[in-house]
Image (cartoon, rainbow, N blue to C red; front, side):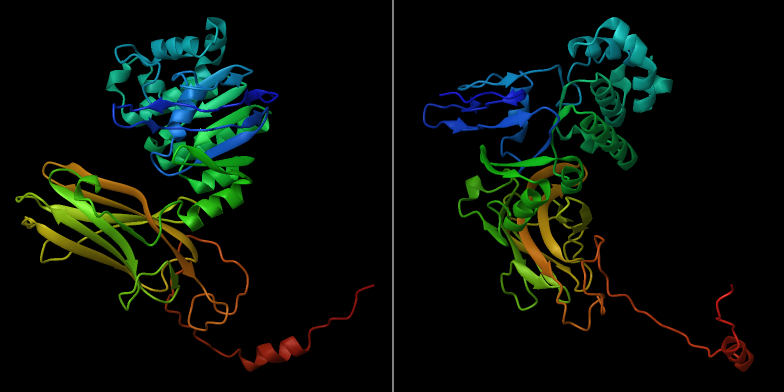
Length: 416
């Protein structure tokens, strides 16, 4: 039996069956059943392939659910892909009117908001240039600006903002924050946990097409990163044909190791930790650049590191099994959960062979009793994405004697 619906989004159930074959069914989403009230800002998180974008496409009426139904009340604006609703041969000006009409805006409304849309997108100089000549950043700025200025009752945004620069991402987050504070409903997918915890009043974690957690953003985001949602400090692929990669190279394992070579899911902040990538090179003649990226609990990319072993740097690798390990020194990372993503690529020409997002997770622990960390005697939580143990020196010079005498003679009596 269907549940009673509350506005504006309700009852998303048995959704989106796709990828059918005669031998196997694959459900991108299954048994999704939730209600979202007016004025809620809902962040949707999960690993790549979990079904987040499929859910937004269903809510945006781009994809029809195989089973169940969606009920929405209110004007909806969606920004799911950079090129959605844009015609490459039309100018930016023409696309503003075209895209606004697609989103339900009347021409008089578009004209009234046109200057604000263009100014927000920062494309004033190029507004009469065909958008096929735009960079991806210009494209997404204009597309987001149109959607955001529609003043929708429901705004649905996928993580297309990742192509913009840092300044524009902040601008978009501020705009979404403004939309949320005006009582309108926002649903957005993001891997940026800082954005999720800052903007959301509620967070939904999707894993393998199902809702795993639904609640306060900070607790859901923390649970997601701490548990790894199916990822641990070690991931291995026994079947080479199911391992990430292509006909040239495939990753067989990704592991987190201690200085002693043990598999670990937590490390003392003072100890170094190794990220181990085991992979099979299947064809000769390629110069590989294995590298990994490290993100903290808020989804902030801390750094990228690539294999710079001089024995292999710039050299073609013959077919065989390789194990590359990058060591992160102690007293560098802040405490908290760290998520590792791994990539294998070649250059000249540049080609991405393997990418494994959210591959493994480990936790950095800072002891309150340790005396040889950057914490010192400070007992409370410490901010920042890094916590390096810096070298400090302090010079001391005693005050001249006359200063000490004057200090002794300071009148501290009350002045009535």
